[in-house]
Length: 211
Image (cartoon, rainbow, N blue to C red; front, side, top):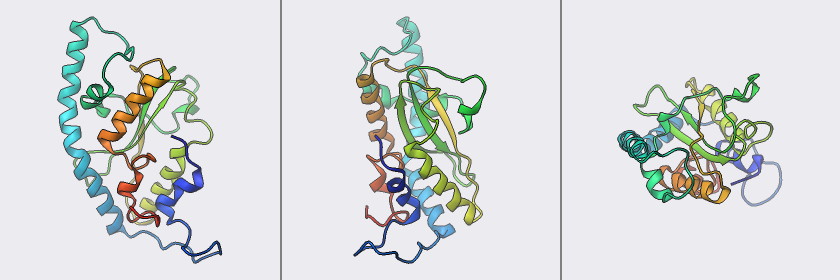
């Protein structure tokens, strides 16, 4: 799941010029229309998932309650859990949450980085990750931080508002293997553009390495 920060920032910075390692001209700034079109394409794909996942999540909560379910022990098929997983069911937090005196969550978790573009009907799920230490995972260097910094800079440059937040789901398997299986099932379903597994799908016009 890890990737160098410089490599990830190519998504919004254009990457190195082809045909050599010399210093090339600085990348051209992204146009407002390019950013809006990128958001529109992502929203067009994820929008129906947001609509369907809300009812699926409610049904899953009811079934868990009837069965006396507690925290997820990893026995459920991750694809079934991902199919009814609703990212909006979890509280949105500021990306600087880790600076708070008391951590709002501890232990194993899935975390979801999202934006809420004012011109779109539904939010955008940008990144899905998993961790065994929810209160520490976002401190220091992180793969997604370079993406978010470049994304916010590109948006601000053309006068578009960036309203990114992070959400945590702590009802996840304690075991790393089962937790990563759920993470991968969610990535396959939602195709978040900042995850390395799916970034090629949404690369244009933010990277020069194709896609």
